[in-house]
Length: 350
Image (cartoon, rainbow, N blue to C red; front, top):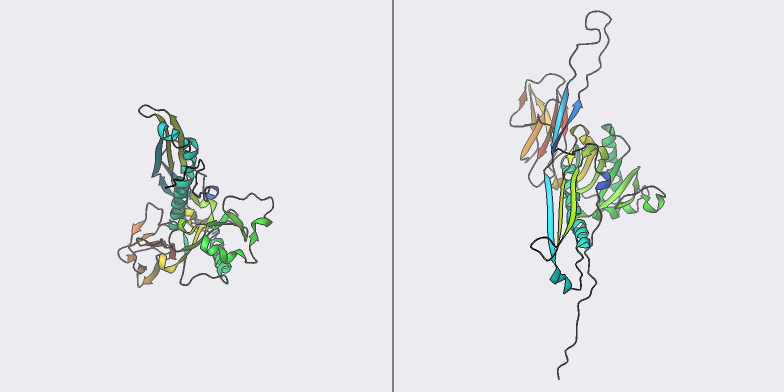
């Protein structure tokens, strides 16, 4: 005689793992996009200092009008998702699909990592300082490599405060036991954000899943105000029994973006495997011309007005040697290749 054992569905849902945003606390929010899609940011030029002359009509030096540059930022990311929960299905599935809770869970599971990954990609590809490593980082040299990064930023006059170290999960274990690390248990009453696991040289350390970083990136140091990261619209709502549906409809729409401020690009430092990053350009003088090279680059962009070629509206695509440049002209260039992290910015003064 057959015995048919009973079974049933549990009313407990097996939730997927999620985590809060790893970037929100460190995103730049100094500029307001309310009511507009684009903003323009002025940067005012400076003039060099010379010797005072005690006679003549140019005692303070040659008079020139103070110039400026403009960087335009236009938001492009307009995202959304929606789903329905039919009343009949809900009634016959132990009412497990609580639509308000599912809406929040979908934000955490889908939208939050999408925003974090987008920000990391934009920040790192716009970084002014990129170091390509020919060998894997080790427990013996990881802290020194991080300190090399902070020194590079300091040499570019980046403020010592508001720096954060983001390190990929698979590399974090190599720094965890370093004596220079201040553990989370020793931070006392300090305010710490999501993912913070300690401090190094005054920087909070945030451990990040490997898949959130562009391929090959080991760690990333960010000065908070080097970027503009607007979240202009964030709508999460539930419609109860809308026309045509017996049940609930969840809707979400959010508009966001991430921009690197050209004059502050050196506030972003990336350490990456050489195989995953385009080599920094080499600018060299040959007779009365200047060449810019980077092996296997798809394109090289440059400026001769001192602006950041990654963000400047005056950036040009390099195609032949430059000529006719006046003494004191600053050439800045970066190289790119599809599938690779953008190079850092190389500077050369004529």
